[in-house]
Length: 81
Image 1 (cartoon, rainbow, N blue to C red):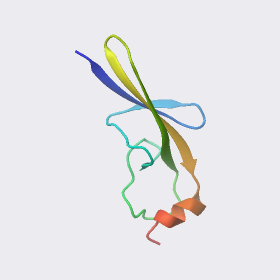
Image 2: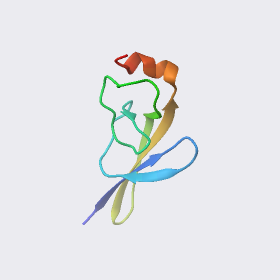
Image 3: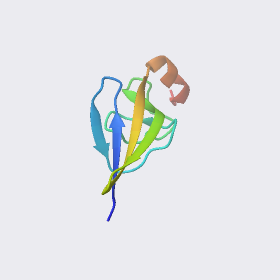
């Protein structure tokens, strides 16, 4: 049986496994959960998936999601304020 692993890579170099796959361009919070639009405020830590890569080993299918930080000035476009 093949195990599917989803790993997010923060800009600072840290990594974290998440429970579900992400799409390219989606906004996520610091825990890797998708953010619902419109955002309640632009004053939050948010990341965007800018790159997706995958690899396979004998027992695993690993998806890597590379994140970039989205700054408050850009988050204003997604906020309901």
